[in-house]
Length: 140
Image 1 (tube, rainbow, N blue to C red):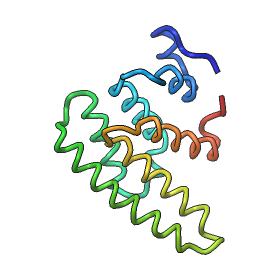
Image 2 (image 1 turned 90 degrees about the vertical axis):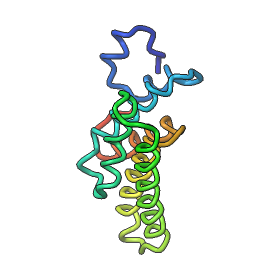
Image 3 (image 1 turned 180 degrees about the horizontal axis):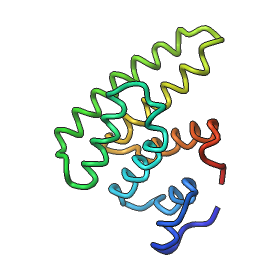
Image 4 (image 1 turned 45 degrees about the horizontal axis):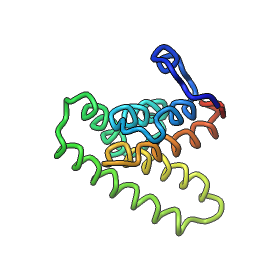
């Protein structure tokens, strides 16, 4: 998977892994957050918790300078509570419901990470896994 070297290639890329590779090791928090938000937006309708969807929206507004750090932190905390609740449900799930519940948790966790002070790469990775399973994103 090649590293993206030009703005034109970045804007035209549909390969999340190439985008993540381009950001690897660079201090580009806005770009990392926006990449995670963009991947989240592809699966926003799959996020069943309003707090998760709200976290994605706040993360995007924060990256664009339209939300402050306090709003970002509040969205992070709300999304974190949802993700915690979801992971607890996964741990006690029966085998037949386990896969579905882990998918729900993965989206909640990724939404939480979009609002986090770091971890946007992790959020993008979690969403890429989920999207690949749904057939929405091809492996690169």
